[in-house]
Image (cartoon, rainbow, N blue to C red; front, side, top):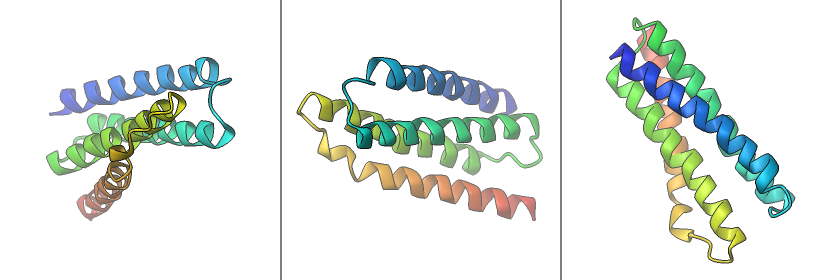
Length: 121
C-alpha cells in the first residue's frame, strides 16, 4: 500500500508542476486574471495533497485506504474539474457539467483530513 501511495503522490506532484508551468506560460495570455487564479488554485491544492500523500506513504502508521482514496479522488474531482472548466471556457465551450464536481472534490479532501485526524487519535 505504501508504494502505491508514494507512486500516486509523485504522479500528482509532477503533474502539478507541469500544469502550473502550462498555466503560467502557455495560458498566461489566454486566461483572464480570474481564470488564472482558479487554475492556480487547482494546481496548489493538487500539490498540497500530493505532499500529504507522500508523507502518508512514508509514514504508513497514519495511512489507510479510505484516506488514500479520499485524497486521490478529491484531487481528481477538485483540481482536474477546475482545469477542465478553465481551459474549456477559453474555447467558448465551458464544460458546465464539471461545476458540481469541484465541490464534491473539496468535500472528499475535507473528509480525507477528518479521517487523518481520526487516525491520529
